[in-house]
Length: 322
Image (cartoon, rainbow, N blue to C red; front, side):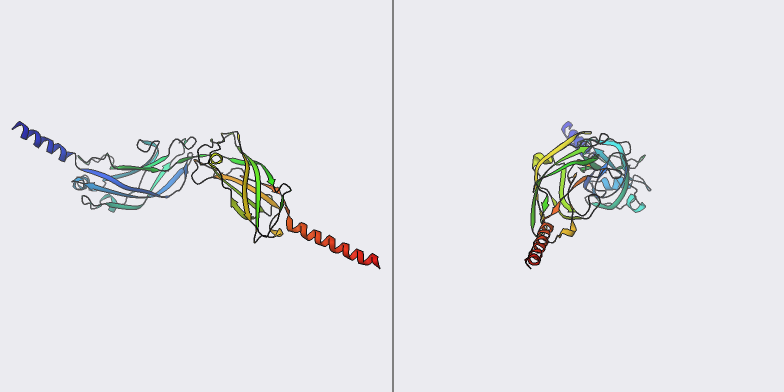
């Protein structure tokens, strides 16, 4: 008899703990980037599933409000922080959704605002996850529904902000800075970048997007023949702390000048930006120019000038021969 009572008691405990809700999917439509010191309006999609009686318990909890959907930051992908947390505005039909156990509820284009005005994301290594949680509305009880699996975190870095400028650009090949249109033009160069004193540090293993191009102006001109420089893993991981510099040597790229003429450029330029996977971003406004241009000579123009000199020489020769 005692054994039978224990079995019944254990079964009751199992049933009591069986009602639960699982978050199955969480994806962010916008924004694509967040950082400390600003507020962000999020649009996201969510799927969750009530199981083993959870649907009835949740539907019985309140006839107006049942759910709170919160988005939060996390350092490790499991521990949630309330720093800058926001909650989604749910419609009446979402709050009172008709649920069935083991049937997934899908909510698309949910909107919530995260206020990160007072959040310090460090060097992009503090908060590297964004999480969603589906819980009872404040003051509402879901009775015995287990919500231990009602959260999901995805990789979503709260990034550092660094004001990086290119302070040195030296073309080593061609060393005479003569650029010839009509085909592929190989160039090699060294460059130095500087991070401002007031910036966050640039750190990580995938920091940089470096481009080379030609332009018709030293500042703010039209870019032509833009190419991305292929960087090694050691070059990608060049760190630049606030107030310091970082150096790149022997960078190489080939510009496609098939459709470029001498009229298109007077300068060669390089730019340094964060890569798509970097833990930092450039200032959204008020930052310094992240590029530097140097004067170059069009090789085709030299040929034209030489031809003109030759023609004059021939004419003078004919003139004086008479």
